[in-house]
Image (tube, rainbow, N blue to C red; front, side):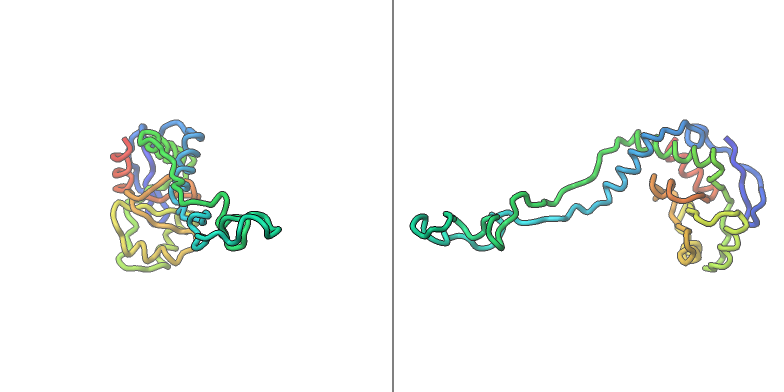
Length: 205
């Protein structure tokens, strides 16, 4: 498929041919949903932990004799019934990550990129052309393109672009090798360079 290349002034400056297998596939909502959920689940720390009666300090001696006190029998002061005792069903550190096959992940990424292209939310540029960090210059470019809530994608690290974008609300930046399902579905538009699109095409083809 052919996608238009937009200049920094917001006008068309040619087109780029990209693979239909990556940028023109069927949108599979259940698969995309599974990929997004898997990504969020993998980001959970799962470090919550509580102590059972065997983990709580103390309680090695029977607090009082078995009979003759008039009290309920007790074997340890660290019983869950006692103040300072252990928890009955204590929370444990756990792994929340969900396994997603590589083929499924790549198919989900292709579906997202294809849907972005169909909805005209994927914008291709030759380059951002920032010689130095300048937030005002980048804001002017994005305004000319008619986008505000946007993800900027480059083929390699671009410090000038990163420093220019970090103070703009609703503008995120990442490299083509770092994209994931969540960062693609979250913004209203995705602006990527031709080289970044080719790199993603090669990776997902």
